[in-house]
Length: 369
Image (cartoon, rainbow, N blue to C red; front, side, top):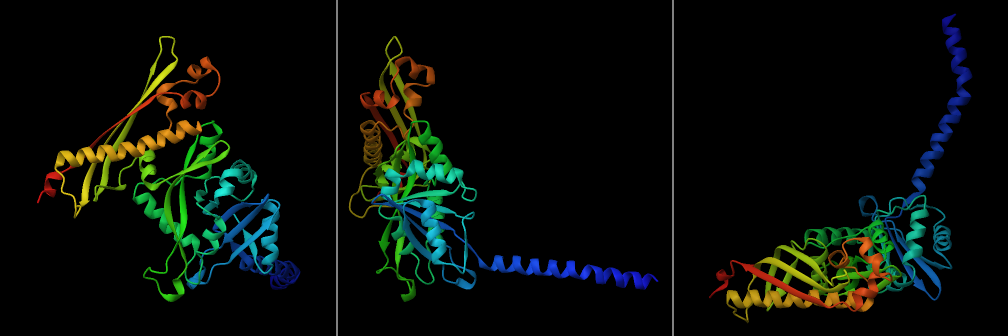
């Protein structure tokens, strides 16, 4: 009797089991079609948007899926990309790097921030990079056979962080620019690898660091050279690990700090700003041409870094974009700014600023002949 009931139960359950089996098979088929996009590039071209994507290298170095499409908006371009690859279901929740071309960073920054913030799949903590040129070139031209833009960006990311550069996320950029100030974002550019030691099937464009992009509330302001970017890092972050060259001597920054102080009139109006920096370095490689005394090397270090810091402050004043956080020294509270009305950018533009840098080279006496 018990055996008959068990047989009856199994027979009754078969339709449901077969249905379950079909669903699992369908889910597995959908999973096999899923193509994870890992890098996305955005360009602004003649009133339209170009979206370039790369899936990254697959298992066993399977070539990346790399595509590009242009349309009137980001969503329309993404729809066109899906039409170009009907055999795959493009999935954007795992995008690691968002690249903005020069014109997109200049004209579309706020639109991009709002679009990502509303997106059900893209994340605001995605790493953001600005390309000194077209993002399409960075995504497409650096993906050749056994190489891929995502792998190159990951390598560049590790290199930048270990060397003291800061990689910012879209959320960090949005937070800084939404407050009316500015933000720094790592800039990259493409470089020919023809003379590099690569095998024939790896010859393509490379991505190399190109300093920082300065982003204001309305988009890209300008680019800082790698040297000027070191001055900006000294003022805004931790420059430890950065390599600099002074009079042919290659040095590593061991520590660095900056103090920003404001002078005000008796009624509290900002009258001047004082920026005092100090840094300590160690020599990694001595110049083969110039032989400087320890005192001369310290002075050269202070003078060189002072020029970089001054260049950064000049750009902040000329643009009215405080990407260096100078307001904290002159107007430490929001009430102090409200007293004068207007904007901090207007005050900053005409504010006298003095810069001093005290540089020291550790064990520089070891360089003596």
